[in-house]
Length: 261
Image (cartoon, rainbow, N blue to C red; front, side, top):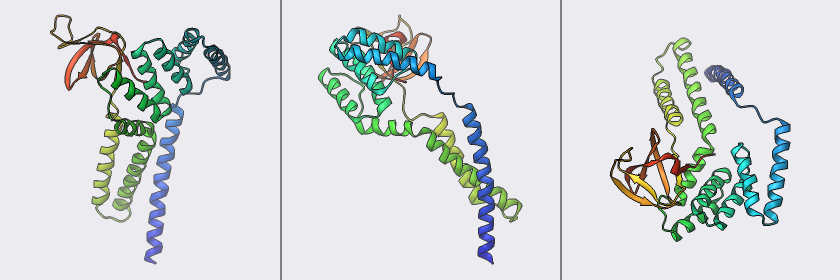
């Protein structure tokens, strides 16, 4: 008898939790961006096919222009980004090549891209490239962002339903469920508001000046070339606050290309 009552309680808690989860899922689905129309997809496919044709016939400059137009319009594929990186490497544009290699890694999570970036960084004495395993872990966490958020939210909803049931039906103080709810809500808050993967940018030009403050009148810290990777800490007017050799410095925003898709 006691076991049947316990099963019934669990069933009721689960039913309440499922109802709340379904409501939350419906809200997320409605808020999600709508897919591109078939007409836009067809135009992009034609443009990509033309760019690939130019690339295969070694008309790299013209191919890159078409790829860049697609990317500027929010259309890209991982293979396209890889080709853009190799075109820029062939043209001797180290910073641009590393920028598109970074984008390719974000789009594909291909470990070979990390190896290539490490090789280029070592060969050209570039700063700011972390250990591969760290990047892989952060990239995986970023890729699973929504899944992790749903799991934590589901646990929070279940604990909330359990608290409600224990207080109203069982007339007991839900202390353990309350502690668990507080922990899961704290985890959810941290997960949503604090991104583990810091924003980074690639220095796009040679003779880039790093200053001690967000002003042209500040003291000069260093002059660096293209290809270095900087961790972006914040923004102030036209300046980026970045990390350089464990120091906080400032650089003009247009000199750095943020790595994000």
